[in-house]
Each structure stands twice: as C-alpha cells, then as structure tokens.
Figure 1 (cartoon, one colour):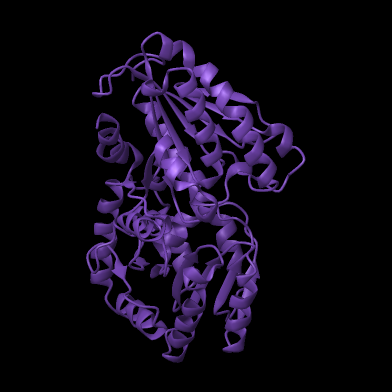
Figure 2 (cartoon, rainbow, N blue to C red; figure 1 turned 90 degrees about the vertical axis):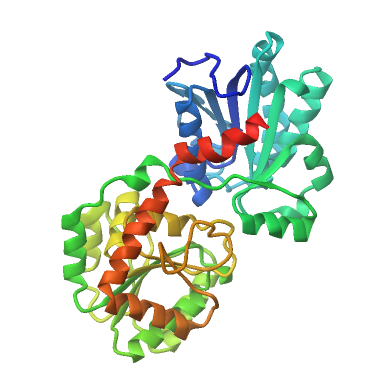
Length: 424
C-alpha cells in the first residue's frame, strides 16, 4: 500500500487527499442507519488506495477529536454540541448543522491549502442534506482563495430526506451531484430537475465475514417446523411493514407456521404495525438480545407459539448474518428503496433476499434474489412458500446472491464506479 501523502497513480494527476463530509460515521454514537455503514466502508476503501483520507463527522463526544488509522484520519466534529445531546448523531441536529457549516469549511481549507498551493489536488465527497450548507461554504472559500480548480467536490444523495430545503441550483454550481441507484437518479430528474451520476453503495469487509455453521444449525433447530423470516428496516410505511404482517397472517392461514423476526426503529409507525398484527390474531413477542449467536439463541428459548418477535435492541453484525443465513427469506420488500443495503447484506451472508423494484439495481429476479412486483401480501406469501418448498432453487439463489455481493465490495465499487468519475 502506498504510504500516506504519496501521489497515487490512478489517472488522477496529483490527487493526494480525500475528504469525506458526513454526519454519520463509524462510532456507535454516529450510526443511525445504512449511511454510517456506507461511510465506514467507503473511507476504508479510499484509504486502501493510498489516498490520505479524512472523515469529518459527528463523532462520539467522549472519543478523541482526531484519530489516525494508517491512511485514514477520523475527525470528530461538533463534539462540544454532542456532549449536550447524548441521544446520538441526529440529537440536536439543527445546532450541529449550523456549527458544521460555519466552522468546518475554514478549517478544511486551511488543512488543504499547503497541498493545493504546492500543486496538489484534493477530492471532497459530501453525504446527505445535512452537509449541503458546508459544501456551499467550502466552494465559496475555495473560489475566493483561487483554489477551486484544484478540488473536485461531489455531493451524494442516499435518499430523499431534506430535499425540500436544498437550493439545487446553488448546489449544482458548487458540486457534482451523485446518488446511489438508477432509480434515485430518475427520481431526482423527475422531482428536482437534477441529473445525478450513479455511484452505488458497497459492502465492507464485515459483510463477508464467515457465518458460524454451528450457530445457523442451532437457530434452525430452535425454529424447526417454522418458516423463519427476517425483516430489518425503519418502521416506515414505505418499508411495507403492514403488507409484511398481512403476508405472515396469510402464511399462518396456509399452515406454514411463520415466525417473523422484526427489527425496526423508534418510529411511531412501529406501534401501528404491532397493533395491526395483534388485530389479525397474530401473537407478538418482544425481546432484547445479548451479543452474537448465544444471545440470539437465548432470545428464542421462550418464544413458544409467537408469530412475530420484535427485537427491541440493536442487532450486531454477527447476529444479523446468522439470521440472514438461517431464514427462509429476508424481507427487503420496500415500496420506495433508494438502494436496498439490507438485501445486499443478506446476499453476502448467504441469505435469500426478497426485494422490491425500486433502487435494488443488484437484484435479478429468480437468479440472485426474489423480486416482488407489487405490495400484494398474498403474492409475497406465495413467494415465501415457493422458497420453502424448493430447497434446490433457494440454494441456487443463495449462491448467486453471494457472487453478486462480492461485486459490491467497497474496493470493487471504488475502482469500478468512483474512480472513473474522478478521471472524467
């Protein structure tokens, strides 16, 4: 690996630094969903190319302000605000956005200037609507310093949150706009009149870690005779939770003895989902988990005849991979999914993903995944039954899914989709 600060021969001239701007990051405090996973994998992959990579994020207020991991530098910003907001990265979001936009760009310009003034170049990758004011401020400062032509700035949309508050004309002048799927690209053309470049999400090394065969066997033993399903998503109507519960009910009526492992968030829709399940006569249990396989198995000791088990604690990566592999299917059947990281993670773990037809560019119906064409719960129940009754078909889908997932490892995504954008 090239040493930190060396020019790297990737057709990028003298680009020696990469600066990633994001609210989310690798700290537990900074993770609220898939963006934290994306940022961790992306920055690690950039650093592995030899780029001196800096992540500027809303980090744990009790951690060091700066932490170096070989070529990767973690800069925890707004810590003085985060100390008053222990609820996580988006607790006190407005104040953090203001401080991030005000204080980071001047600091970043000062950090980049020696390299830029000596003839070097830099790359800035910003994520999500919270960083837009900072991008506009940085662009202004670079122009005033006469250094704008030495810095490539990209701003990425992972989803549509906060779009109403973005000055798209100003952002288009300040940065090259990207997004994570063809579906999102078309959505942005139709709704905000912006043509974005597509740079897909990727998977970090953790997604490909081996899954304990013993834990999978134990999970299947404890759920013997049940149709084990897993769904991990925010409690949001777009995630088709209600339709999923209807499909579980349909499977129960068909005698398939379903058991849905459900992990949502703190969103109000979660209460509606649970109430709907109980209104159909489904038995709902709630559990918190210890870490890893042992914690997962213990949670299933006393489930009895529950049809739905709602996990109230965060699922660690080991637990998720066991569930993905042991389940008949992982239900990533959203109506609106900008990319669909859970489906891809399930495929990497050797699971069968049932996806929707929005941003899941990686899903090929009947080959590496099951793709649902509508929100019809009876159709979803039928898809699950076909998998349960056709182990040979399911096995082929699992193998094809794992092959596809490897194509989305972050180093492959950076080489295939990001670096060509920089060379353009």
